[in-house]
Length: 446
Image (cartoon, rainbow, N blue to C red; front, side):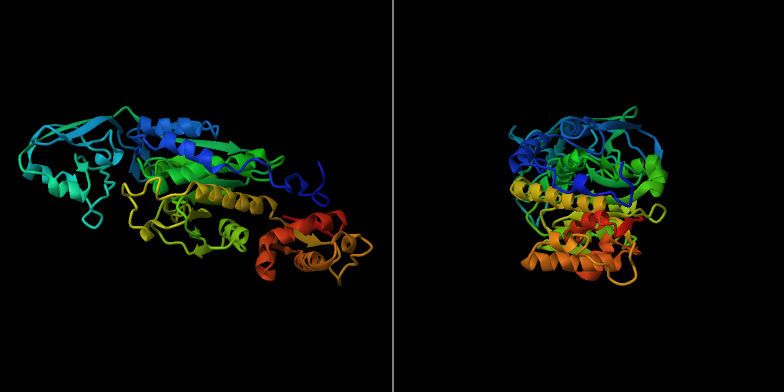
């Protein structure tokens, strides 16, 4: 294996061909995942992981119900066999088989007749979105209920309604999370985390797992990985907490950068929400990867959102950012039936995968260099560097990159810092590292 001084990044120079997914391929997987009744526990999560496991070789973990995880406790496993509400005329008002959002997620079982007035306390709708079914959960407080459009709700006549909710809670059940690990030359890890617990929501739920699954192919196919990559699929909140309870201490030692993938499917600008640390490698790598990508934004950390709030809780304070497009607070169809396949774009999902492969490339190739000729500018002509830089505009750009690279190769600036200082694209600076290493001008020091 070549020494650090002469090591080339050539193993990973070229884009790995054929790894970015075709939008039609993502769409096919989406259609298989869409109808599954998911929750924070249960067979729906396992079925979802079975399908994702055809793309990513997942190792499954089960955390028994009742297990204390940090300040929480894993709830009983929820089983949903069916749920219907039948009107006074004998016609079905709602059936969970028609839409998984029709039943309050984690609803308690109930069978019986109730009056229209009694039923009202168990119905959920959205007056501001009269044609949307809301997503309502009751994970930790026993209750039963149905969700329907506000239009449906106000059309319900007086009379007696038959409620049939066939659910159960397994005290001997478990919470499921899965992971896949791609070992690298170093133990430094990059984490991609996403959640698999929401039923029938396209952007809020399925976009993150789909992007994570298809992203896996890129680092998996690299001829050589410097970093170790870990992909984690958990139920939101309680799953991340259970994962951190088991693996948090190790992550505090090993994690170099992490990203929570959520709401990455609708056609809007890419958003990197920063880590609690603010200037971690995760923050800087995404910023560098997308610095010259049109239509991206960088926002600061705030302690709400998705699982980044667990990874960035003060005791862990891990270098984890959140990657999304439209933030939940920015679209009114969030947590409703209108977050459907019409709200997302499969081309956008494929672009989100591509955007994250750019981040992987930055993480893989970001190194710190030290000049072996720090006094004055070294001669480039005798070392063949001027000749290999070509002519015209490309030559000027490459020369500018060489000059910035050699000037900042002081053992204190990594490539990301060089890109930040110079304003040049990271890839432009990265492209000159190999020739400068071969010419014996620099050595790798970090």
